[in-house]
Length: 346
Image (cartoon, rainbow, N blue to C red):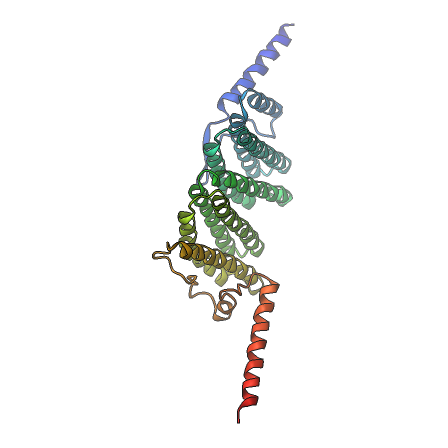
């Protein structure tokens, strides 16, 4: 009987400790994450899981549950990093899957709160900032994790990007300017990642980062459309996007010079996406008479070869097969016109 009582007390102490100290932060690169506490390779890890279940249960209301779930997602991310350092593949997978689950709960509860008329501008901003930083942490985990766990980390990156997109859409309804600022910071992170991977001659890593860049660029357009649909002034949003283009293109030009020829098509597509965003922002600003000192033409860096610049002229942005066909058709039409002109000469 005493032994049972002792075990119950011990269990209660561990659960309470888990609840109280799960938020302690430690440095992970340039980011702050909670202390991982009990890690998945511990025989007492089930106590951590129980503690989190109790914590979510005790959180009152969907907004509070969203905040608590985000806290737990970050702790799982810290666990994934700690396990990657120790090369514990199964533990990395478990922690990363836990991150995905808690992040999904956070997003679900935010939507629930919004549907109930709760102001979620603060929690959506906190979550958007957090998930954009999670991508940077996951970059670091991907760099050190054993090959057997890389697929799971890739899934966690996808979950992070999806969570970021959802929270940015929610935030855009209340504060589109802040939403675009967070998104642009995340975009810069993906471009810096592509540049770092190019330095390491990791073509696949470059292409993955650029795929994420294109997804995030799409979020930017959605933010503007959401704000416009609500009748809000999007001038600041469009100005931020247009001004960010120069830096984006400069980084892409650096990457272009580093990667092998077979990877340059991906860079060209990313450049096209960036130029398209610039053109759309400029067109919107011109319609409002708010262009100001923003450069009308896309600021294509000198490092981009002339033949690539030819693909990037307005209306023919080199974003896929359709655009390449348009270039060929225009060149054929110009040739036929020249031939007709020569045939009519005396």
